[in-house]
Image (cartoon, rainbow, N blue to C red; front, side, top):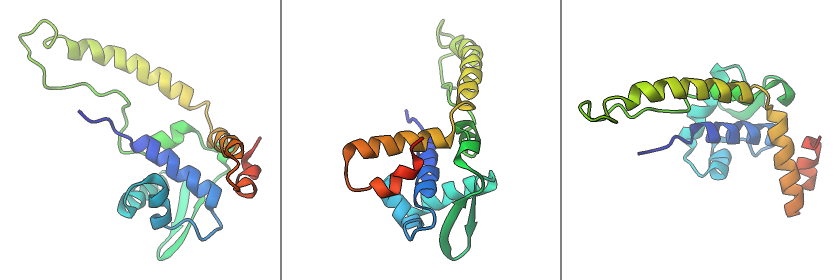
Length: 155
């Protein structure tokens, strides 16, 4: 039983790009170090972000950039850029003759649809700028010498 972390990694990557764009720190190798994944996974996610119109990239250059202000990118926009379009997955392999196994998929489908709508509605209210502000505030509290990098993201 695995739980996808693709949305988390996608938010991580677009946040990293927003903070470090216009620096030498935006290569897939550097981003992969931050995400603790491999560079090819970062390039795949960046491709999804590019196809969704959230970032631009250039072949042969490490210079991804946001296509619009962070205040105009929502978590829903980022979520739509991922390969997984449903937050809640139903186990399709259950015993059909069992009271639970024979009915749970239908019941959960209805309940999960309600939850999906509620979560997507909330995602539309949270912007990348909100995430960047929280990242900046957290980093400032840690006082690790990165004030200059993150202060511009504080609201």
